[in-house]
Image 1 (cartoon, rainbow, N blue to C red):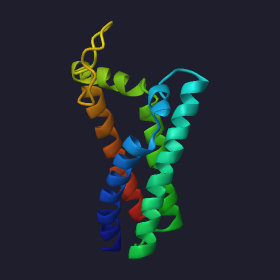
Image 2 (image 1 turned 90 degrees about the vertical axis):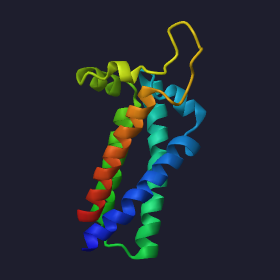
Image 3 (image 1 turned 135 degrees about the vertical axis):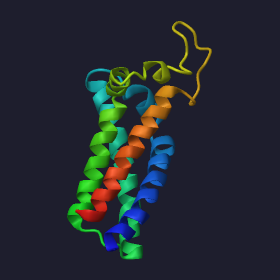
Length: 150
C-alpha cells in the first residue's frame, strides 16, 4: 500500500515539476538550440535536462522528506534517470517526428506549424508540441512508478 501512496503523490508532483521546468526554467537559448545537430545542440539539450532534472529531483526529494514517503535511494535514482534520459531523447528533436511518421501521425505532428518560408502560424498549439508533452507525461508515469517500487 505504501508504493501505491508514493506513486499517487509522486506522479502529479512530477507533472507539475515538468511543466514548470520545461516552460519557466528552460532558457530561450536552450529551447532554440537543443534540437540542432552536433555538439551545440547536444550541449544545449544536456543543459536543459540538467536544470529540468534538478527541478524534478528537488520536488521529489521535498515530498520524500516532508511527507515521509516510502522511497528508496535506488527508487529515487532510477525514477530521475528514466525521466532525464527520456526527456533528452525526445527533446533532441529528430526522434519524435520519426516516431510520429512510423505510426502514421505525421499530419498531426505538423499541424499548426509555420508553413515553409513563412512565419505566419507560430503557436504552442502545434501537433509537435502536443505529442512532445504526451511523450514526456508517459515517461513521467514510468518514472513515478519506478520511484515508488524500486
